[in-house]
Image (cartoon, rainbow, N blue to C red):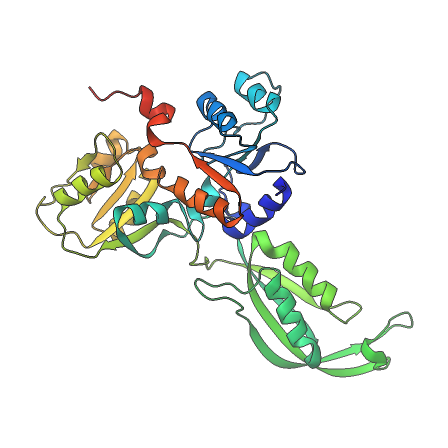
Length: 361
Protein backbone atom coordinates (compact mmCIF):
# COMPACT_ATOMS: atom_id res chain seq x y z
CA UNK A 1 0.00 0.00 0.00
CA UNK A 2 1.27 3.47 -0.87
CA UNK A 3 1.81 6.17 1.75
CA UNK A 4 -0.78 8.29 -0.10
CA UNK A 5 -3.46 5.64 0.48
CA UNK A 6 -2.48 5.31 4.15
CA UNK A 7 -2.92 9.08 4.52
CA UNK A 8 -6.42 8.80 3.01
CA UNK A 9 -7.30 6.10 5.53
CA UNK A 10 -5.97 8.25 8.37
CA UNK A 11 -8.52 10.91 7.40
CA UNK A 12 -11.23 8.37 8.23
CA UNK A 13 -9.50 7.07 11.37
CA UNK A 14 -8.17 10.26 13.00
CA UNK A 15 -8.60 13.26 10.65
CA UNK A 16 -5.60 15.57 10.67
CA UNK A 17 -7.98 18.53 10.83
CA UNK A 18 -8.76 17.55 14.43
CA UNK A 19 -5.19 18.33 15.53
CA UNK A 20 -4.72 21.38 17.74
CA UNK A 21 -3.23 24.49 16.13
CA UNK A 22 0.22 24.16 17.73
CA UNK A 23 0.63 20.52 16.68
CA UNK A 24 2.39 18.96 13.69
CA UNK A 25 0.63 15.69 12.94
CA UNK A 26 0.78 13.90 9.60
CA UNK A 27 3.46 12.79 7.16
CA UNK A 28 6.76 14.12 8.52
CA UNK A 29 9.31 12.33 6.35
CA UNK A 30 8.73 10.31 3.20
CA UNK A 31 7.36 10.04 -0.33
CA UNK A 32 3.61 9.69 -0.90
CA UNK A 33 4.37 7.13 -3.63
CA UNK A 34 6.46 4.87 -1.37
CA UNK A 35 5.13 1.34 -0.87
CA UNK A 36 4.57 -0.02 2.64
CA UNK A 37 4.14 -3.58 3.92
CA UNK A 38 5.46 -3.41 7.49
CA UNK A 39 4.88 -0.64 10.02
CA UNK A 40 6.83 0.01 13.22
CA UNK A 41 4.67 1.61 15.92
CA UNK A 42 6.23 3.65 18.70
CA UNK A 43 5.30 6.41 21.12
CA UNK A 44 8.51 8.37 20.44
CA UNK A 45 10.81 8.50 17.42
CA UNK A 46 14.29 7.63 18.68
CA UNK A 47 17.40 6.06 17.22
CA UNK A 48 16.38 2.80 18.91
CA UNK A 49 12.96 2.95 17.22
CA UNK A 50 14.62 3.48 13.84
CA UNK A 51 16.95 0.50 14.35
CA UNK A 52 14.06 -1.72 15.46
CA UNK A 53 12.06 -0.65 12.41
CA UNK A 54 14.94 -1.67 10.15
CA UNK A 55 15.46 -4.97 11.97
CA UNK A 56 11.79 -5.83 11.40
CA UNK A 57 11.88 -4.92 7.72
CA UNK A 58 9.57 -1.92 8.13
CA UNK A 59 9.17 0.81 5.54
CA UNK A 60 7.12 3.13 7.78
CA UNK A 61 7.40 4.35 11.37
CA UNK A 62 4.03 5.34 12.85
CA UNK A 63 4.47 7.37 16.03
CA UNK A 64 2.22 9.22 18.43
CA UNK A 65 4.66 12.01 19.28
CA UNK A 66 5.92 14.00 16.27
CA UNK A 67 9.63 14.12 15.59
CA UNK A 68 9.36 17.53 13.90
CA UNK A 69 7.50 20.30 15.74
CA UNK A 70 9.22 23.50 14.65
CA UNK A 71 10.03 24.82 11.18
CA UNK A 72 13.39 23.44 10.01
CA UNK A 73 16.16 25.65 8.62
CA UNK A 74 18.41 22.71 7.82
CA UNK A 75 18.47 18.92 8.05
CA UNK A 76 21.60 17.98 9.98
CA UNK A 77 20.07 16.13 12.93
CA UNK A 78 21.58 12.60 12.88
CA UNK A 79 18.18 11.05 13.61
CA UNK A 80 16.56 12.76 10.61
CA UNK A 81 19.46 11.69 8.41
CA UNK A 82 19.24 8.11 9.68
CA UNK A 83 15.57 7.93 8.67
CA UNK A 84 16.21 9.48 5.25
CA UNK A 85 19.32 7.38 4.46
CA UNK A 86 17.41 4.18 5.19
CA UNK A 87 14.49 5.24 2.99
CA UNK A 88 12.03 5.11 5.89
CA UNK A 89 8.83 7.14 6.02
CA UNK A 90 7.48 8.70 9.21
CA UNK A 91 3.87 9.52 10.07
CA UNK A 92 2.93 11.00 13.45
CA UNK A 93 -0.62 11.05 14.82
CA UNK A 94 -0.60 13.29 17.87
CA UNK A 95 -3.42 15.56 19.06
CA UNK A 96 -5.68 14.39 16.23
CA UNK A 97 -5.46 10.94 17.84
CA UNK A 98 -6.00 12.49 21.28
CA UNK A 99 -9.42 13.86 20.29
CA UNK A 100 -10.58 11.38 17.63
CA UNK A 101 -13.72 9.27 17.83
CA UNK A 102 -11.53 6.32 18.87
CA UNK A 103 -8.73 8.06 20.70
CA UNK A 104 -5.74 7.69 22.98
CA UNK A 105 -8.18 8.06 25.85
CA UNK A 106 -10.45 5.27 24.64
CA UNK A 107 -7.39 3.00 24.65
CA UNK A 108 -6.58 4.13 28.19
CA UNK A 109 -10.17 3.51 29.31
CA UNK A 110 -10.10 0.02 27.81
CA UNK A 111 -6.80 -0.78 29.52
CA UNK A 112 -8.20 0.34 32.88
CA UNK A 113 -11.49 -1.51 32.38
CA UNK A 114 -13.59 1.67 32.38
CA UNK A 115 -16.88 2.30 30.61
CA UNK A 116 -16.87 5.51 28.56
CA UNK A 117 -19.73 7.93 29.27
CA UNK A 118 -18.68 10.86 27.07
CA UNK A 119 -16.06 13.51 26.37
CA UNK A 120 -14.53 15.55 29.18
CA UNK A 121 -13.82 18.56 26.95
CA UNK A 122 -15.05 19.56 23.50
CA UNK A 123 -11.64 20.99 22.57
CA UNK A 124 -10.37 19.99 19.11
CA UNK A 125 -8.56 21.71 16.27
CA UNK A 126 -11.68 21.60 14.09
CA UNK A 127 -14.45 24.14 13.52
CA UNK A 128 -18.07 23.13 12.91
CA UNK A 129 -20.17 24.56 10.10
CA UNK A 130 -23.74 24.48 8.84
CA UNK A 131 -24.01 24.21 5.05
CA UNK A 132 -27.20 25.43 3.36
CA UNK A 133 -28.05 24.70 -0.27
CA UNK A 134 -31.16 25.23 -2.41
CA UNK A 135 -31.90 22.83 -5.26
CA UNK A 136 -34.84 21.54 -7.37
CA UNK A 137 -37.09 19.08 -5.53
CA UNK A 138 -36.18 16.21 -7.84
CA UNK A 139 -32.42 16.71 -7.30
CA UNK A 140 -32.49 16.81 -3.49
CA UNK A 141 -31.76 13.12 -2.85
CA UNK A 142 -28.79 13.10 -5.22
CA UNK A 143 -27.25 16.21 -3.66
CA UNK A 144 -27.95 15.01 -0.12
CA UNK A 145 -26.14 11.71 -0.72
CA UNK A 146 -23.21 13.44 -2.42
CA UNK A 147 -22.77 15.67 0.65
CA UNK A 148 -22.97 12.71 3.03
CA UNK A 149 -20.45 10.72 1.00
CA UNK A 150 -18.03 13.67 1.17
CA UNK A 151 -18.22 13.82 4.98
CA UNK A 152 -21.21 15.97 5.93
CA UNK A 153 -24.00 15.04 8.32
CA UNK A 154 -22.19 13.44 11.27
CA UNK A 155 -23.44 14.34 14.75
CA UNK A 156 -22.05 12.27 17.62
CA UNK A 157 -23.04 8.64 17.01
CA UNK A 158 -25.36 9.55 14.12
CA UNK A 159 -24.52 9.64 10.41
CA UNK A 160 -26.27 11.00 7.30
CA UNK A 161 -28.01 13.76 9.24
CA UNK A 162 -29.70 16.59 7.33
CA UNK A 163 -32.63 18.98 7.44
CA UNK A 164 -34.90 19.20 4.40
CA UNK A 165 -37.54 21.88 3.79
CA UNK A 166 -39.65 22.70 0.77
CA UNK A 167 -39.12 26.15 -0.69
CA UNK A 168 -39.82 28.19 -3.81
CA UNK A 169 -37.11 29.98 -5.74
CA UNK A 170 -37.62 33.05 -7.94
CA UNK A 171 -35.24 34.29 -10.61
CA UNK A 172 -34.77 36.54 -13.62
CA UNK A 173 -32.08 35.38 -16.03
CA UNK A 174 -29.75 37.52 -18.13
CA UNK A 175 -29.43 36.83 -21.84
CA UNK A 176 -26.24 34.81 -21.28
CA UNK A 177 -27.71 32.65 -18.51
CA UNK A 178 -28.67 28.99 -18.85
CA UNK A 179 -31.71 28.40 -16.60
CA UNK A 180 -32.39 24.93 -15.23
CA UNK A 181 -34.20 22.80 -17.84
CA UNK A 182 -34.72 25.88 -20.02
CA UNK A 183 -37.32 27.07 -17.53
CA UNK A 184 -37.55 30.54 -19.03
CA UNK A 185 -35.99 33.96 -18.63
CA UNK A 186 -38.11 34.80 -15.61
CA UNK A 187 -40.04 32.58 -13.27
CA UNK A 188 -40.05 30.46 -10.15
CA UNK A 189 -39.36 26.83 -9.35
CA UNK A 190 -40.22 24.40 -6.55
CA UNK A 191 -37.08 23.87 -4.52
CA UNK A 192 -35.74 22.05 -1.48
CA UNK A 193 -33.60 23.73 1.15
CA UNK A 194 -31.02 21.27 2.50
CA UNK A 195 -28.96 21.89 5.64
CA UNK A 196 -26.01 19.81 6.83
CA UNK A 197 -23.54 19.99 9.69
CA UNK A 198 -19.90 19.62 8.66
CA UNK A 199 -16.46 19.79 10.30
CA UNK A 200 -13.85 22.12 8.84
CA UNK A 201 -11.66 19.25 7.64
CA UNK A 202 -14.51 18.01 5.40
CA UNK A 203 -15.82 21.43 4.34
CA UNK A 204 -14.03 21.85 0.99
CA UNK A 205 -14.79 18.28 -0.10
CA UNK A 206 -18.47 18.65 0.78
CA UNK A 207 -18.83 21.99 -1.02
CA UNK A 208 -17.08 20.55 -4.08
CA UNK A 209 -19.36 17.49 -4.09
CA UNK A 210 -22.49 19.65 -3.86
CA UNK A 211 -21.35 21.91 -6.72
CA UNK A 212 -20.43 18.92 -8.87
CA UNK A 213 -23.88 17.37 -8.46
CA UNK A 214 -25.96 20.55 -8.52
CA UNK A 215 -27.87 21.20 -11.77
CA UNK A 216 -27.96 25.01 -11.48
CA UNK A 217 -25.50 27.15 -13.40
CA UNK A 218 -24.90 29.23 -10.25
CA UNK A 219 -26.30 27.34 -7.24
CA UNK A 220 -27.08 29.12 -3.98
CA UNK A 221 -24.78 27.54 -1.39
CA UNK A 222 -23.57 29.15 1.80
CA UNK A 223 -22.02 28.03 5.07
CA UNK A 224 -21.52 29.56 8.48
CA UNK A 225 -19.57 28.66 11.58
CA UNK A 226 -21.44 27.38 14.64
CA UNK A 227 -20.29 27.16 18.24
CA UNK A 228 -21.82 23.74 18.89
CA UNK A 229 -19.03 21.13 19.03
CA UNK A 230 -19.47 17.67 17.55
CA UNK A 231 -19.88 15.33 20.56
CA UNK A 232 -18.02 12.58 18.69
CA UNK A 233 -14.72 14.38 19.32
CA UNK A 234 -13.07 15.86 22.38
CA UNK A 235 -10.09 15.91 24.72
CA UNK A 236 -10.34 13.54 27.67
CA UNK A 237 -13.20 11.25 28.69
CA UNK A 238 -15.67 10.81 31.52
CA UNK A 239 -15.91 7.16 32.56
CA UNK A 240 -17.13 4.85 35.27
CA UNK A 241 -15.89 1.60 36.77
CA UNK A 242 -18.60 -1.05 36.69
CA UNK A 243 -18.04 -2.18 40.26
CA UNK A 244 -17.58 -0.47 43.60
CA UNK A 245 -14.07 0.93 43.93
CA UNK A 246 -12.53 3.41 46.34
CA UNK A 247 -9.83 5.98 45.67
CA UNK A 248 -6.97 3.93 47.08
CA UNK A 249 -7.92 0.80 45.13
CA UNK A 250 -8.37 2.85 41.96
CA UNK A 251 -4.83 4.21 42.28
CA UNK A 252 -3.50 0.67 42.76
CA UNK A 253 -5.51 -0.55 39.76
CA UNK A 254 -4.04 2.22 37.59
CA UNK A 255 -0.50 1.34 38.66
CA UNK A 256 -1.00 -2.37 37.97
CA UNK A 257 -2.94 -2.12 34.70
CA UNK A 258 -0.52 0.41 33.17
CA UNK A 259 2.55 -1.41 34.49
CA UNK A 260 4.05 1.82 35.78
CA UNK A 261 6.63 1.93 38.59
CA UNK A 262 4.69 4.46 40.65
CA UNK A 263 1.65 6.72 40.67
CA UNK A 264 1.20 10.00 42.48
CA UNK A 265 -2.08 10.28 44.35
CA UNK A 266 -3.38 13.69 45.41
CA UNK A 267 -6.26 13.03 47.78
CA UNK A 268 -7.59 16.61 48.03
CA UNK A 269 -8.69 15.61 51.56
CA UNK A 270 -10.90 12.91 50.00
CA UNK A 271 -11.48 9.74 52.04
CA UNK A 272 -9.26 7.02 50.55
CA UNK A 273 -11.88 4.38 51.30
CA UNK A 274 -14.89 6.22 49.88
CA UNK A 275 -16.25 4.86 46.60
CA UNK A 276 -15.50 6.68 43.36
CA UNK A 277 -18.30 7.09 40.79
CA UNK A 278 -17.31 9.30 37.85
CA UNK A 279 -13.73 9.05 36.63
CA UNK A 280 -12.13 11.57 34.25
CA UNK A 281 -9.15 10.43 32.20
CA UNK A 282 -6.69 12.09 29.85
CA UNK A 283 -3.68 10.27 28.45
CA UNK A 284 -0.43 12.24 28.41
CA UNK A 285 -0.45 15.73 29.88
CA UNK A 286 -3.87 16.55 31.33
CA UNK A 287 -3.29 19.40 33.78
CA UNK A 288 -5.31 21.75 31.58
CA UNK A 289 -8.38 19.58 32.14
CA UNK A 290 -8.38 19.68 35.95
CA UNK A 291 -10.92 22.52 35.93
CA UNK A 292 -13.27 20.61 33.59
CA UNK A 293 -12.86 17.43 35.62
CA UNK A 294 -13.77 19.23 38.84
CA UNK A 295 -17.19 20.03 37.37
CA UNK A 296 -18.10 16.53 36.25
CA UNK A 297 -15.92 13.88 37.94
CA UNK A 298 -14.78 12.58 41.32
CA UNK A 299 -11.17 12.00 40.22
CA UNK A 300 -8.86 12.68 37.25
CA UNK A 301 -6.35 10.13 35.95
CA UNK A 302 -3.64 11.66 33.76
CA UNK A 303 0.07 12.56 33.70
CA UNK A 304 2.45 15.52 33.98
CA UNK A 305 0.63 17.25 36.84
CA UNK A 306 2.68 20.11 38.26
CA UNK A 307 3.24 21.00 41.91
CA UNK A 308 0.68 23.81 41.74
CA UNK A 309 -1.67 21.62 39.73
CA UNK A 310 -1.86 19.26 42.69
CA UNK A 311 -2.21 22.02 45.26
CA UNK A 312 -5.00 23.83 43.44
CA UNK A 313 -7.12 20.79 42.55
CA UNK A 314 -10.36 20.36 44.49
CA UNK A 315 -10.72 16.72 43.43
CA UNK A 316 -8.31 13.78 43.78
CA UNK A 317 -5.70 13.36 41.05
CA UNK A 318 -3.89 10.19 39.99
CA UNK A 319 -0.74 10.97 38.03
CA UNK A 320 0.50 7.80 36.32
CA UNK A 321 2.89 9.63 34.02
CA UNK A 322 2.77 10.87 30.44
CA UNK A 323 4.33 7.75 28.95
CA UNK A 324 2.29 5.13 30.79
CA UNK A 325 -1.09 6.77 30.16
CA UNK A 326 -0.40 7.01 26.42
CA UNK A 327 1.34 3.70 25.77
CA UNK A 328 -1.96 1.73 25.45
CA UNK A 329 -2.73 3.79 22.32
CA UNK A 330 -0.05 1.87 20.41
CA UNK A 331 -2.46 -1.07 20.24
CA UNK A 332 -5.07 1.27 18.74
CA UNK A 333 -2.55 2.19 16.04
CA UNK A 334 -1.73 -1.50 15.50
CA UNK A 335 -5.43 -2.29 15.04
CA UNK A 336 -5.63 0.49 12.44
CA UNK A 337 -2.61 -0.91 10.58
CA UNK A 338 -4.11 -4.42 10.67
CA UNK A 339 -7.31 -3.13 9.05
CA UNK A 340 -5.17 -1.85 6.18
CA UNK A 341 -3.89 -5.43 5.79
CA UNK A 342 -0.37 -4.30 6.66
CA UNK A 343 1.89 -5.83 9.31
CA UNK A 344 2.34 -3.86 12.57
CA UNK A 345 5.25 -4.20 14.98
CA UNK A 346 4.72 -2.51 18.36
CA UNK A 347 7.75 -1.26 20.27
CA UNK A 348 7.62 -3.02 23.67
CA UNK A 349 7.11 -0.82 26.70
CA UNK A 350 10.51 -1.72 28.19
CA UNK A 351 12.38 -0.83 24.97
CA UNK A 352 11.24 2.78 24.91
CA UNK A 353 13.97 5.22 25.90
CA UNK A 354 11.82 6.63 28.72
CA UNK A 355 11.52 3.31 30.56
CA UNK A 356 15.16 2.35 30.00
CA UNK A 357 16.77 5.47 31.45
CA UNK A 358 14.32 6.80 34.04
CA UNK A 359 15.12 5.34 37.44
CA UNK A 360 12.79 5.51 40.45
CA UNK A 361 15.12 5.60 43.48
